[in-house]
Length: 163
Ligand SMILES: [Cu+2]
Image 1: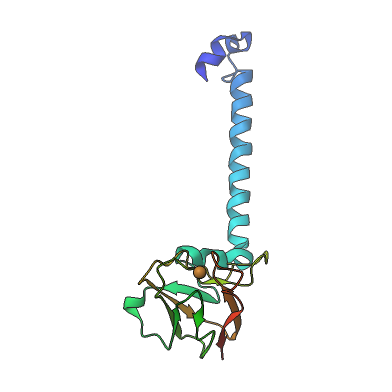
Image 2 (image 1 turned 90 degrees about the vertical axis):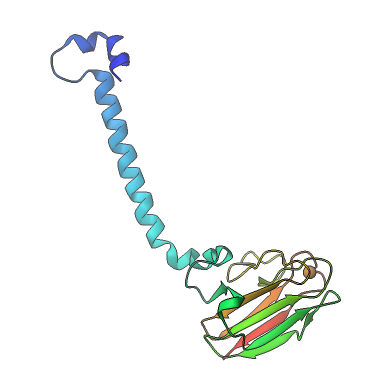
């Protein structure tokens, strides 16, 4: 900033701040206000986008991915021969479903239906490799349809019914 000021006649004034400095100060204030506005907007949007955090294991949405080692699943679904089995499970709110992949190819457990703009919003395990397991805790009653991303043509319309 000081370097910029040396380049202008305004610096020779003894007002304490040259034009550039005033300009930069103004920019800084605007930037600060913008950041604050975005910070508040970020807080306010939790209700709208909170479920998106589930992919990273965070958040307290209708469903959340949890470590299988720390829970006792109330229902088990295997992924075998490119299919979810059973394709529908029923649990109570607060309980956990565990998916285990017995195929050599990877699968996902992704909420919604293929092509739906909200697909993966409630939960998305990401790829589960051969022998891998993922657990999801369902916090809210409802019917949760899900599918597998790589095999969405056939591995779809599976359901977790949460009572
Ligand atoms: Cu699959």
